[in-house]
Picture 1: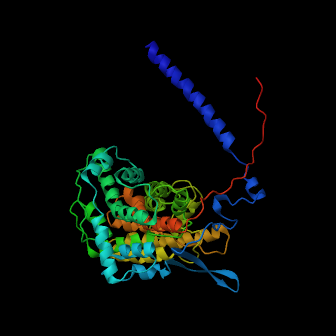
Picture 2: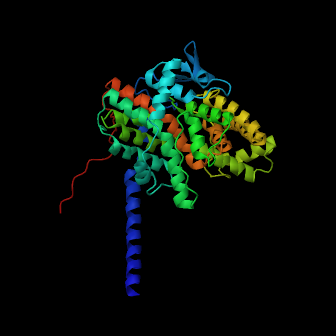
Picture 3: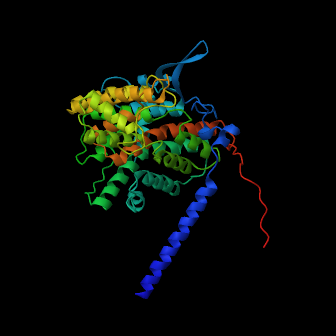
Length: 455
């Protein structure tokens, strides 16, 4: 008994000491925010208007949110270009197109659209690289699965280093080989990590299905995820479009910039991609569509009448006033650092979401999203007292689409990674081809110089 008491007392002392250490850490790390302005430090690599500071050049994609008329920026419908092509054209229309994501990946990696023959060869190569060995599945994915699947992705990607006979060679041919393998294997890694997590955490049945070589990436994700492996052409088409729209968004987004930074150090491909996954895991970057879903559930449960414009508007005011939902005062999925009148990705996804909602009898759910989008944009403009329009971004409808497709929320951000690895790979190769210098921005020291105390 006395021994147990002693252990409890010791634990209490250690807790108190750790609390003291935390306080000291917080005090030591706090920097006067006025110093950022005094030294003209671009905090977060953004200028005073919130625009990203130029840190590099790229030919991979272009993000346009304004028109420039006689030297003056004016709000405009957003445009997104991959290697010079409007993303709307890459997504295409109708449900017949099946391999838009594969075609887009080819474009991002090689700078031009493939011919029919080139695309067929590329898809054949892609299919041949999809397999994961039983040893890898058993020893890596099935052991110690993570509740957050992004950590499972990182672990799996880093372990692939050990299965590569030439992992540290950063020549362009070798990195291209590694990139193609990662792009092809990422859907399997994500879905298998999900199945392992559900099996070992909730005792769900464990069914691991191999990818089908004749299927597109979107089709294989639905095939491997669903117990019966079945899907409709519309479902696969919508997911294919979502993958295209998330594949790339300029070199300045956090995870892609992370890839540039890490690549510039000369590290291996697996480390660079794992670093990008770590960045994307952060809720400020990759998890916004999940927050939209949570917010919409909260509105459903607490708004007095979700079919009433006035009732929805009143509840959104409560959210902004930190009186509802998570208390953050944010309407998730609204606003973008670059786009003004519209986010082109959101416009495309909204159209697909409307088609899918009609097919699944979820028109009322879609109508609520549409209502929240319109009311939130107006409220946010009034709240911010600025003339710049505020539009919904890509995260607003992507979560709804994934939900209608029966994709579990644990896979929302991994799906982003499955898509964005195409862009990460293109930027890594661009960094290597141009043999850029190691990226090392400067930090201004604002502490004091002190004399070491004499004993």
